[in-house]
Length: 323
Image 1: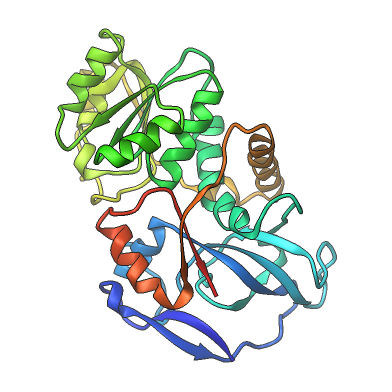
Image 2: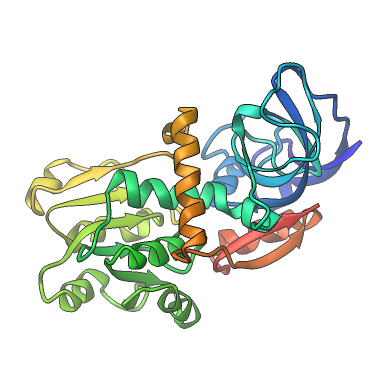
């Protein structure tokens, strides 16, 4: 028997049930992984509430790190005792799980399990946003919404290290300090300030080359007013609610803008690309361009408490559950 957090019907944090389940031996192509750290991400809330549907009952969680305790038939690149991390299918909120070896990467000894549990979904998200969706370079002007969040903080760090001028929006003074420490040159308290007007002021009217928006409804369409002509609006999340359908003519009216809604899982569907992206994140860590300071660690049994704090946007940085 292993302890898991399971959802039997969608709803609020209270539907996260801490319970025991039987764990079968790993099947062909699978390994059995004992978690040491489990990443918590906003997608877990989307799953729990039914915004991103999943077959019931299900165990939330797409990201984790731990030690392989058994391997199934046909697994060649991993063996018992290996330290690994992953971003992959649902099932992360548990003491141990079976998972396809194709989802795993080896975790370097210099990285902690907590690094591994935040490096994958958040780190790879930052990677595809900065290096694949829009290749940020020196002198670019970048707007990062929720700059103190798990992904937002990484975007501030990495974009700054690449030589970009980073403007971040945050929800309060404490989060402003986090974003500034992460490399943002300017911070806007978007709940108190007119952030498009402030962006125009900070850039002396030149505006931004790209906007990274994981907030959604609360920052749209204001984000479009922060972009220079031919700029790119990147929507990668909807913490405040999804962006409603809009007239594409807006993009023409506001400067022949581009808009995209990418997904990490599309980028990592190809194994070679997955490995290359992971290596890029590891190199950024080793060069000191980013770090994965874990803001909070909670027992797996307190997953509901964590979801409540995350959903009400009372958290900053990365959060890890430990079995």
